Image (cartoon, rainbow, N blue to C red):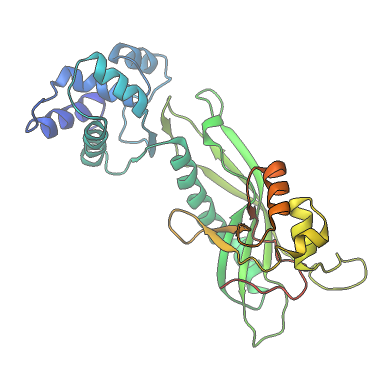
Length: 306
């Protein structure tokens, strides 16, 4: 049986029955509509009639809850539940009635979920795997998206396609001759919006994939840099100034799961002189520096963090 607003409202009523302020079915319907971005049930139904909202919710893979509107609507309905309790009741309703639908608390969480889907699609692509077979590698270190995903840019009328570089970095098999460890890909990610807060899973197409063989130190390749020169370039300071910072230990940046590597962060608080610290604060407003995963490429005698 298709699940809609009323099904979720039944769960809200059931799960709130033991609280000091049970939620009637009619008000539960209003709260569900608010979580889906509508100020009333009538607004949601009008959007359904115009085919701007799905007719049923059980086929919707992703929903970004509008918790701000949910809290606002609960106050208008004079419900006494706390903000935290409202969020928990809504999450429980989706878990019970729509177990295959992922309820996200923000657009950022949706983008993070899409990021993981894109990583998996790239890792599973036949062309990427063919290129892996041409490299002497020991596992996959990470799949890095060069740009942040922005699924919120999709509209109900028009799917949104983002084309971006993606890099697959392979572990090195030190017992075999080196033949490259980076696969450079071009990927198209298409987001389809089903309603104000409802989304399809992204469609991912790997447009190209090729093992980067331009890693030699032949004439014409980029010259090797010292650590100070690399930091000076990133911070837009002189190399002598950057020498003060060259011994700072970077921290690896990972995603929510702890497995998605996105680069490094340096903290120069204990390394910069008062004069240089003041200059960095004036120029950047921070003594921290974030860099991408390729920062150490071309750095002479680089000591990679563990």
